[in-house]
Image (cartoon, rainbow, N blue to C red; front, side, top):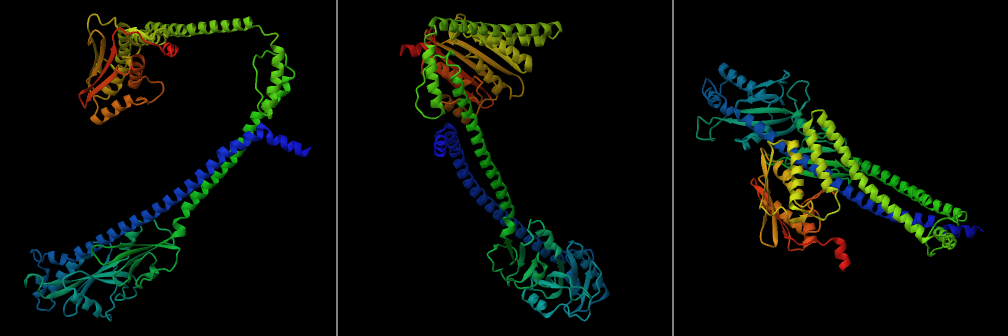
Length: 600
């Protein structure tokens, strides 16, 4: 008994439909989710790494700029004026014959004061004379340790080797100030008496030192969005750490962290032999990515559960009515049904079909073909009456609205409703495939009247030109109005000022009718014109939206009605205007779709 129940359930339409729904929906969802997650994860990883590299590149440029800034500050010694004369600091000091007098001290103090407040990150400045004496200033008025031998011999030797250039000294504590351990980076440059000798070959009359606080680097690297475990290093050519966001590493020799948990990136500087090294902690860097992936995974899981629930619910909803119908079919076997169903399955639909066929056998003796025919005839007559009533009701309603507007002295709205009513009557008349040019012209005038009322006579003008006997020619209904509408919206409306649309109808010969719609609007570029021409020849519409009747619609109708030798031609010039020409055979009867297929 249990096996029969399982077998019946397995063969039921409920089980089949549920399994099919889950298979068709779940498998593509799993595949798509897997591909999407992998693609997203790889993309985000590349994005994060590239973003870090860009930040490192930007930081390196800023470090270069910082170095050049202090290089330029050190050069102020050569442009600092003394006694009203430009660039005389070196000569003034050299004139003291190695003896420092009161005037020299005052000159140097003034220079040091100027240099110190040139940059916010300068902590202190020194000027050392060749005899070892020096003058200094600092912003925090720190007391000097006079027992400290300033500057040390290593600095002096480095400046002798690099006598004409800016020299830097690795980050160090300010030991020459009492009670200060502030970390600073020192820059030094020799002052050469360039006026007392040829070029830069003069003697050194002093050395200028600048102490730069670590805030100068903090200002640069605080702009980088770093995680807590990310470490940034500024290294010199000896791999000495000049700066690091991990302050404990400053002044040490850099050793890369031997761990696969970090991603290493390096940026070399252009103006100074420094390099920026970034150690990016991968777990923190990709943590947000993993959170996003986790969220997406949860959403995908919920979608899968929802898919299964919907499949079961929909299958049950689909099969339950069928089973109910099979039960009720035994009660309504004498009902009114005239059809035969072929039994092809053993599921619920098969049971329904067999019960339905038993009922049909009894119905065949009672169904009268005449009665059915009368019902169909009455239904057709009713549908015809409805088709007549709907346009008639619409026209009457519009007329009531128009008369109400006229009664309220709103003649412009009344005119717009009247024009719309005429257009609707013209469009909703399904009895004719073709109309005369006069009828199409009247419809265009009604449409243009609406456009004039909407945008004003200062914006639009229309000129209809035609030969005397051309108004009686036959052409497809609603073939010119869409072209005029296209000229209004795409040619005249974007134009500043008034635009004119000309409709020219003429006979090219005894067998051809030409209707040309010109406008002096904004026109099209050659590239756009070629795209429009190409789309006219293709199988898809130029216009967007299923309710619009555009150039492609008119062109296809003409080709369908008269053949591929006829249709629409377009020419246009940018900022000059567009011309759309429609050519159709003159006096040829239109073959309708039904007639064309009947003849086959």
